[in-house]
Amino acid sequence: MKYDTFLTGDRPSGKLHLGHYAGSLKNRLRMQDECLKGYIMVADVQALSDNFASPEKVIKSVVEVTKDYIAVGINPFKITIFIQSLIPELAELTIYYMNMVSVSRLERNPTVKAEIKQKNYGESIPVGFLCYPISQVADITAFDANLVPVGDDQLPMIELTNEVVRRFNRLYDKEVLKEVTAVLSKTQRLIGIDGNAKASKSLGNAIFLADDASTIKDKVYSMFTDPDHIRVSDPGKVDGNVVFTYLDAFFENKEELEELKKHYKKGGLSDISLKSLLNKTLQDLISPIREKRESLKQDEMMDILITGSKIAREAAKQTLYNVKSAMGITYC
Image (cartoon, one colour):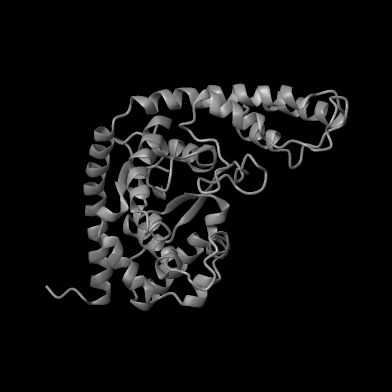
């Protein structure tokens, strides 16, 4: 994989949580050592598509998200971390790609459809929100990436990217843009601690990498288990049990975990003991991340972001030049 380049990122609409860690951050840590190049984008433009009335939330989160990256072990000397809005070439690429995607194609995107319903947009869907998948295509192609670490809910974005790439290359009869491959996490999308939806910043049902020990414990002990497991002796269900879902994701001794599942299913294992185990597991994981995070200063994070944005912009400039040359619109 030393010849590969990956591109990934996050919307800065709040601090990152365990869903991000399991679903993407662990992949990035592995790929920063395996790939030739890597780019992580702090996607403030995309975040503004549904936070335009409160930009201060996005602005503050740019640094918070970067702290999370560095705290988990992302190395800014190996990976280029940059701010989306500091790369104006992305906006120009987005405009060109818009001519290659229909409105009906955007509306069929299942991730967009789900978010429209979640945000109760109804008929008042902002154009910027509807079109953000095209912006994602620009983000990926601008840096000549061929690998994109994503959750399975973002596979439609990879599909759209490759549709645009093939259409552009065919239309202008040149291999200008590169198709991409999704790199899926081995961990399935992490459910929220309420058991009702995926872990989400906006739904407030997540355990954050910046949470203190007391908050983590409170969230773990509030988790849904099996409502029919009233007495310790009662047989319990593992499927749909949020505590076991988190143990599957973060408890490293899989043999011991399988024994715990068997014990719980036949009865004799309390929910409290499981929650105690999960609490210790998550405390051990998050504590060093939180301590590292608390040592990071805002000025240091901005230096990383500004330096990374300069590097990223040079790559995007080259891609934009190649795209415009293929189209024949380089006038000088």
